[in-house]
Image (cartoon, rainbow, N blue to C red; front, side):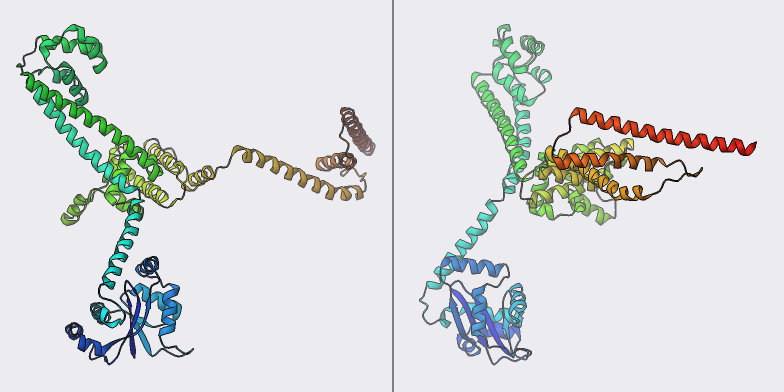
Length: 545
């Protein structure tokens, strides 16, 4: 069987013919040794056809298609033009060797050309790549390197641009920096406390907050110069007048040592740096919240911005998080404990990063595992919605949060939660934006349909009622109530139809006349029924006598 080789270079598609190769000669070691020698390799592999790319943009499109395993129209035309034609109903007497198995399967599906990709084919293509410049006649030295360099730059640039547009990279960097800042601020604040405590040790017990301590340390500076005149300024910083007075009193009777002006300047500078870090940390948190509402609004609404950002950062991206099943998401961040439990055959962890959510903290000890499993399920749904939805909305996240709240109530109080399908239907309706006017119009249309159906039933029953003869027997003399109602409706309907055909609106007087007529007719019917009853009684009395 003849073997053809398809080589995708930076300058175009090339088709090679490998002849004189038997199954015995397909030893990869022997082929690998003979590749370096052009004389031996040139006798086995010869170029059959070459199709250069039209431009750099065309080369980039063809490269992207090959990397995705897709055959372009240009490649299909080149193969059909260069390869021998196969008659219908007969097998091909050749095969096409490629480096990409996905591309080969796609070519075989579309053109029915038999393709193969194995170690032997890859070694032959390696030799083609090594000696490609010498197979093409009009190719100048250095042209192939330039084409490869330009194509590699444009291909890499396209891939990097795709990653830059993914905003979850910014979320990952922000949450990592936020965690680092928390550790650094805590370390630096402890250093400020320890340093300034040599001068004013009583201030540590009065002011507990790190940021306020740095502010007060910078303001007080030298404790010997602190007087009651500075109490209003201290009150603005601390927020409590009693605490400000306590600081002033403690400064008067402080046991700390005196520091030189240079030492106090360094302490003030370091305290200012800590304050700046705390301010930057607040701004970074606001930035993270804004980014999370842009990239993963449903996940942020369900579990919070910080925990959601940690999940995205640990998974690598929002797409990777969306691919994770809920069982993986549940223990995301507890990998060490998981593998330790598997190694020692102990209990596996129930939760990882989602433990920082408030829902698991609110659950009782026996329900923490259940709550973590349920919360991981909802988080996986929210992450997939955020990853694949075209529009940004927090509706699904809010509904999922309501479900988690209902599940907490179910575990604590036994209140049955709503079904998932009902919650999702309501979420979809709110997203689609069904306004209240549509909801108001729907019942009115239903009422009109009911009225129409009633009118049709009455019109259908009217001739049957009119055709029935009056029965004067004793048992059947009283008509059923349903027939009376039908009679009343049939008597009122012709007048209504006449009013509609004439197109004249009914006045109040006309309505009163109709009511009077109906009352008179009802009175006549009642009188007739009472007379029938009296006759029956008389006949019974006569029979008894």
